[in-house]
Amino acid sequence: MIRLDKKTYTCPIDVTLSFIGGKWKILILSHLHRFKKRSFSDIRKNLPGISEKMLSQQLKHLERDKLISKKIISEKPYRVEYFLDKNGKSLAPMYEFASKWGIRYLKEHGIDYVKDQKLYK
Amino acid sequence: MIRLDKKTYTCPIDVTLSFIGGKWKILILSHLHRFKKRSFSDIRKNLPGISEKMLSQQLKHLERDKLISKKIISEKPYRVEYFLDKNGKSLAPMYEFASKWGIRYLKEHGIDYVKDQKLYK
DNA sequence: AGTCGGGCCTACTTTTTGGTAAGTTATTGC
DNA sequence: GCAATAACTTACCAAAAAGTAGGCCCGACT
Image (cartoon, rainbow over all chains, first blue to last red; front, side, top):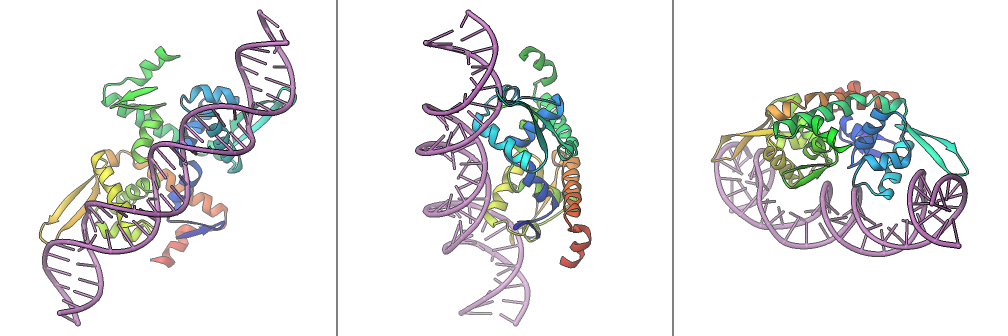
């Protein structure tokens, strides 16, 4: 057992998962990894199914954990840009591997994601 | 949106996560990755905090998803051995990366996991 | 005979996570 | 003036995941 900041972890992987676990975090991170800078609603549009509540909540956690940052582009009409910060970038191999594995799995089950994606957008 | 077997996924990463998401799966897989062959209670001992219910449930899912297999060593006193199968092995970079990232994170926060571990076992 | 370890299963409860819907401030466009 | 868009927040609810506690079979050990 590892103790850090009042929490306990069974092993280092558990520590890593505490940052990127859950349904949305890796998806958001990998989206930012791919697009570099994105607004709130850009991210939303690219994660079909996520609610505004979830997105803002998850972005907040990711910011708190220093995996992403946001730049306030304008105050009056409030406009922002989210992007991976150093920590978030250091997890890139994770997003890439998970994505490739998924694509391979889909291909083995008759779905060509890379090809089909061109139909979607 | 991707549709496969009556379920929908937002992207390939989502597909991957459907296999290894949750609190325990990666921990179990990486344990088997490290030790090759393990009995039910060996795994249990190495995942402090997991309940028997959780372990057997997760093992069942992992088996169903063909990430692991089990070999029945003896029927009468029922004894088994779990091990990664091909699919489970193909996720190895994931376990390894997540583990290394966690170790690095811990080190940056004053915990030397590799060194401390020798004290535990 | 009684207890322990191994390998489970089942019912039940709690916690965590996620979803819905509505409300807020502010700007741009018709 | 009204609707739409952006970037959120809040309150409430439902579903999913995880935890608790017990039971079961079997063999070995004392």
